[in-house]
Length: 243
Length: 242
Image 1 (tube, helix red, strand yellow):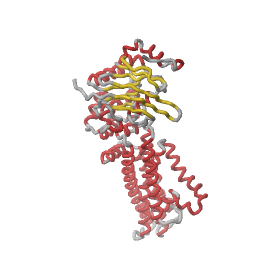
Image 2: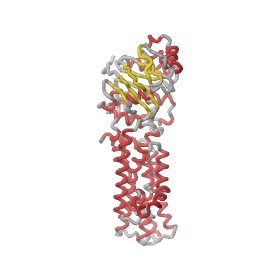
Image 3: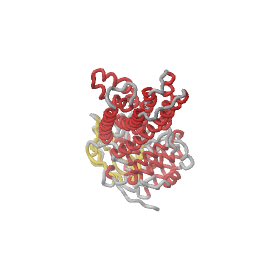
Image 4: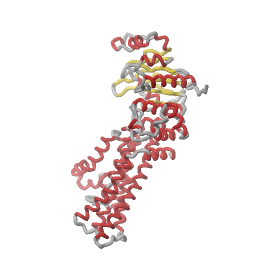
């Protein structure tokens, strides 16, 4: 089995306010290499904002978001250190997928032959010469993953990567992520589909209203759905204490 | 920086929209020159001939929109996320876009100038005359037209970076040129000549140009371009991508 440099991901006292809205508040957790960590929380809990702060797209109001101990913008070759698929990641509908990936390969600093390799890896080899405008949601997700994998990065940050995938696609994604984690990569993925998360992840981080509710192994939670609902129940948010 | 410039060229080469937009340019120039003839202008005279070739500068509205699409187009299609993930020092991306879009604007302006000269020469020859190519004002007008196309492309890049909503940025730019600058000018009296589009009109020797020299117009427009660029660079570096 091939291995990769082990790179932890961590946030320390991370805080983001948009005007008076507290999107993320004093968030601290660590994501370990070699495992898949699920990043869970209700809509508006601050997951996407946290991922964007990890990627340098959103400036923290306070605290630090670190990739292997460094802020993302300080990484010498950021796309070779971190692969990211965000909801906000897109491709021009008039551009062919292969051209889209060649553009990314150039700024990732990898040769064009990586484009064919990642297309094979995500199952887009046949469709790579089509324009992205004709792609299904599932194919767009695969294209996003292909872009993230171009730089063979030790860290993957994935926002709802299973969105739009059919059941076979989800099973494929689960296998792919497991292989990538077994190579020593650090994988953080956000999701709403708890049943899917329960089958995929080793560790869980749950946030609600921008604050940490739980961080630990999946098995410590027992029934994931029941625990999730208890930990993120807004009516009890002031009473909750996680041990 | 070389890699970023190469990347911007690669981005442009793999989509059709900007090229379809620019393809309208030579057509509009030919229609403009034909319009002068239909309107009864005698293109064998120096001044009407200059009016005819000035259409090369009029069409720089297209390079303005082309420039706007550089950054605002990336927001529209959400490719800006990948772009900034690859180059967290965002100012470098914007600088590369300035270089590529200004160069394309200049090349496009050159194409328009050639089209304008040919169209005007054909129109004159059809009436049995010949275009007086020794007229220095004719060449100065053409050079101004080329410069207009380059500078408006650069201004477009800044506008798209400042107003990342593509439709809003284009609407704001066109509204400024068609309406707002004229309204503001009414309050400014003689100072009206120092507004940005007035500078462009003087540079390209367009109809309705204010009474300032071509060189002053060019320097004025270039000055605005530099100020806009500075504001665009500082704001896009700080803006949250959500």
